[in-house]
Length: 253
Image 1 (tube, rainbow, N blue to C red):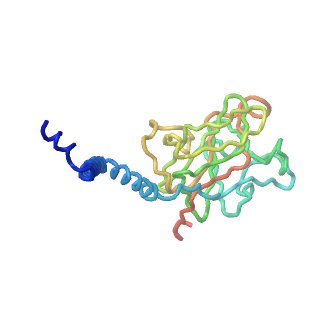
Image 2: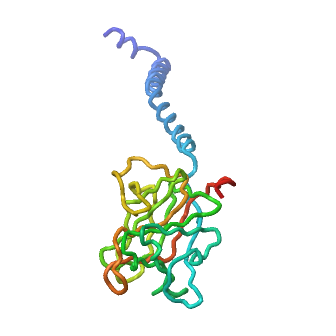
Image 3: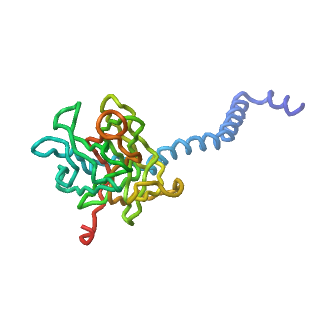
């Protein structure tokens, strides 16, 4: 204990100096943790910066609202039924030619639309942009205005640039009473291969699908129609596709 007695016998200014030195040692011992915290805080903004700007939703690639004839009656859907000059319409299935155009422009209760009631087998249609493929990856989305009768459902279909046809597990047609505008993200849809000639599914759900270059986009009704009146059919009015445009080669155009 002699050292302790010696400490208190020293001059006051010496005791103060020793206390300051001890305090400095304690601060130095704690400084690595403080430095680590400071470094972590500084790294956080850098990490956020490295992540880049938020992903932006792609713009409207095309919108089709269909076009009536001069009579304004119900008739078979053809290329003349397409309002956009950049889109090509193709009908699929054994009775795809029986898809009809009906409705009236500006009538929210009966807009111009495709009707599948006359199809006596599964049928489908698709639209092809003459200038661009559609990149349906990321936040790309499809929006359409639909109504159904009975247990029918509307499913999205796509044709990839390599010719592969796919049909999605996404279904629309929740209302038999009124028109419903709905939208979905193709990247969230699970896809199966589609025999487009018969409009029937083949194989199992696919684990991975590349939607970065889509040639045609449309819908399918996998059930035969019941004809006019309540029973079983689908109505599809305007179709909007929000996707990044991928320019076609001059040969493909």
